[in-house]
Image 1 (tube, rainbow, N blue to C red):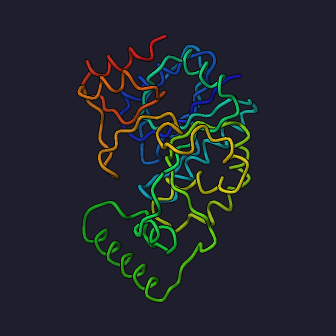
Image 2: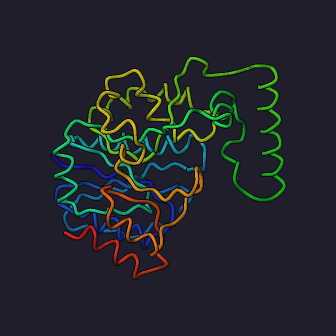
Image 3: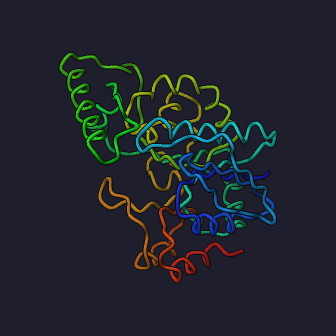
Length: 289
């Protein structure tokens, strides 16, 4: 069966073109959601894979529920296509594969039916509790400059603090689970997530940083938890190598990271940039047919 690559893109058109080229295989279809803030979309083409650029786009903002809305646009697109895919790989536009498509398809055929979702292994922090259990106004405006953004951040802090003092917790009965946003999941799980769409918005609207909790939380207490490839290791659970430094700083990979990227068992990595062409050529060679 074919695989679907679902890509959330907002910058780095050169890198995105390289990613599309590496996914251009007759066994794949590629679906791309461009952030609505982009007014001029890059020209992309494939020779073998189907390429579908979503027309219905979301203005995606950091830590806002709009990230989930964009994911749902992709989920709807693959189901509306009528094609049943063995796996759906959610990637960002600054990700790259570390293995060939032959290797990747063989790997997922060996583990057919498993869900590749990385689960965070640490207990929920005080910061996460505030992010999920209290209403956050102006979450869309968290990043920015100027007096307007500053005032909104101050008001947001005040509103959340008041809710804490008044003990106005929301989502009290929801068993939140944190995990990676970037997943490889089956047709059955895509269907389930679409069935849960309205519930997802009810839970996550007004929260902060919901993209890291969205899918892991919705599968808690379902049979999909028993289908996880590795529930004890976040990176291996999703088969993705992500450039975290410490607990919460995400950096771009550079040439000094090549040895570990070359040796890892993981299938995909993020994130990259297009500044060092020689380094990118080395990475691309890892996934050559």
